[in-house]
Length: 342
Image (cartoon, rainbow, N blue to C red; front, side, top):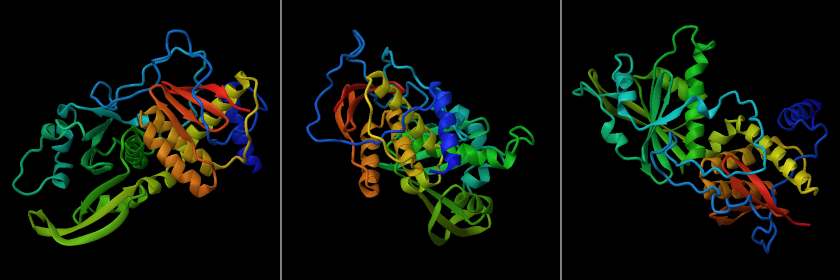
């Protein structure tokens, strides 16, 4: 590990835990013959582990995990350059209709013969997701399981309102994609860009979109039909383009160290690898978003390819993970080690 990475890891560890020279992060592993938890949970709270269902009750469209009163402290968040809270979910068409009908945006979303757009019928289907920012929103329309089509309606930030104005909308888009990949079943995003929208065609590759193909003269305009480019952003490509999730991976490992220390046990150590932090971080964010099965599946797919041993989902309610040398129970935005193996 480079000295720079060592210094960065130690600085994060001290900020999160206040402990200097903490043990090296632990690898997620799994052994056969997993047993159910043997350590009792806090009194009277055993049934209140993480279990989420879809619904409009929260901005994310997924009910928040039931809060478990636990003696496990939640670590301070690792600094994130593009936090997912740049966006929030809305079910109210009145919050976005003025933006999509803005004279600067409307021509990019409409076709001749349409004078006004109203997305109320779209939002009536709660499989569709509207994520709002301070200057517009992004609509994700469900096409089929795990696949959504993206429609972006963001105004240009006022000069000086966000420091680097050119990067603000890019950050909003990245936050929205991160929200979709970690808070929903999303595995693939699609978008279509007509030849008349040159700015979007330039912008898309910067966000990781890959041009799949082009069709000639398919998008109607007042001057006739123009060509259309078809882009996709898949989970694996998104993950490679999103180093911020490594912070969630480091947060997971530091909390795991705290938990092993609480049990006065040492865990298995492994090399500090950013690729591992990134995959663990993405899985941890999915677990926090109620996408537990997706998290286990995607982490295990990566782990087998990378040479790490897969993890296992022991129980969904309560949510218990087998990482080989321990069992973890998810508790709201954190977790607790409830069994340590030799």
